[in-house]
Image 1: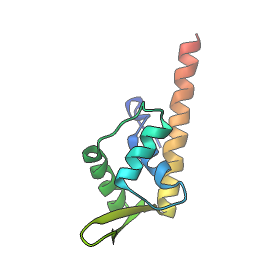
Image 2 (image 1 turned 90 degrees about the vertical axis):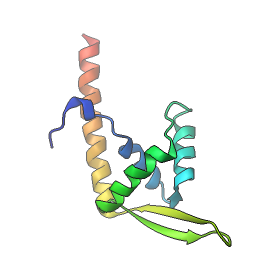
Image 3 (image 1 turned 180 degrees about the horizontal axis):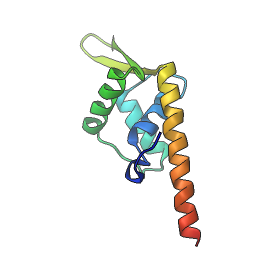
Image 4 (image 1 turned 135 degrees about the vertical axis):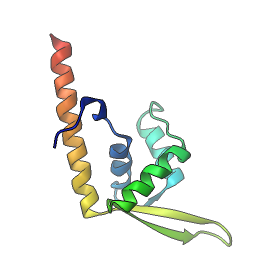
Length: 108
């Protein structure tokens, strides 16, 4: 799979990784986990994240389930699919390849 270098880092890679953490998670939780695990360096607005989650759902990489959490509030919980795990691995391998190339260039 060949991609251009400008696409070496994709936010969907880290979103999938967070969703793959073992537990189903919801949007706000994903944003907070990303912020915490990146020591505040990666912040994504929920309004930016949801279109990515919808796309990943449409592509079959994650599933979503709407749950009532109290009388009026619902949350959408996301879970990675086996196809999503494969896609995550592809994204990560591409990321490692490109960062390795950048490291080689910078070490000269």
